[in-house]
Picture 1: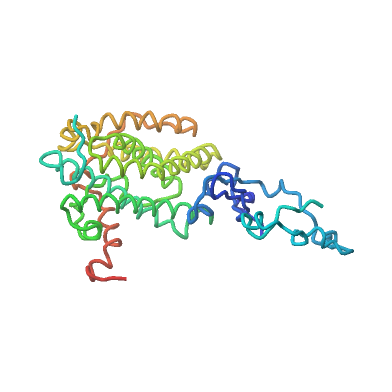
Picture 2: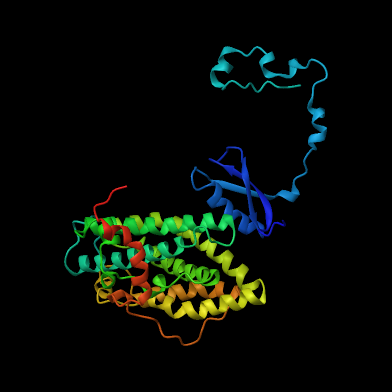
Length: 104
Length: 261
């Protein structure tokens, strides 16, 4: 069955200024302006929000699941994982688990 | 002019005027919210179904806030005011009790209504009766979204196809005289304007006309000429649609007014 409800737009939600926009789902709409209006009620009526983005799903270039193996690590690369580093106590106290020392 | 800080500080013709104004606004909100809720499960697309239902809840929420203020002014509690009155005791304009009709009429009615609400709330946000000024300021943010929503739909449907344009023009021809009826003056309007609480209805109507005209023009729609406002709602004279609406709205309450769920 063909989709008669318009184009698909992906919706990104920002909870407070400075936060990253987080992907929350999609809406159908005939154009971007309508997509924003719809996104507001679908995704921002229950939780705090200061800003929304909508992006046409067709604008997204994605990898193929068939190529999922490109993400595999053929050799031991645990040195890239942040828990491989010793974090000074003072840093650990201010950070929440994930370290930012991920230079690889 | 001195500000009136609390509900208790209101008296005389000013208090009677505020009560009349709150009934007009609350009843408009309750009825249009109820009519719009009739689209739940039936709107053109799923997203709009959710958005429009959510907006219907907004309107009912505004009605509830006005009813609460009425209660503070000595009227019955919100449930009794919403469900416990006879049709002639309601003060809504005829526009809001009409059947939901098709989507074009629904959008046109909602747009014309929201614009009137925005004009009125903007005036009230600076009024001399502080509790109402504060409430109006709070409710305006939801109305801002309603106006964005209405404008987008008006432009899309007005300019989409010949069929959609014709449906929208027919809806506007039908709704416009009723929308003018939103500004039906009552005997309380003069004391309200003298007390610096609500500007005369004619002033609000002019502001409303200036607000809706550009959007209607952008949507390619023509305002019907020399139409006569449909009055009566503000003094309790309603079209039969209100009785039909209330039969549904009050059904459960009339079976058992004290029911809790």
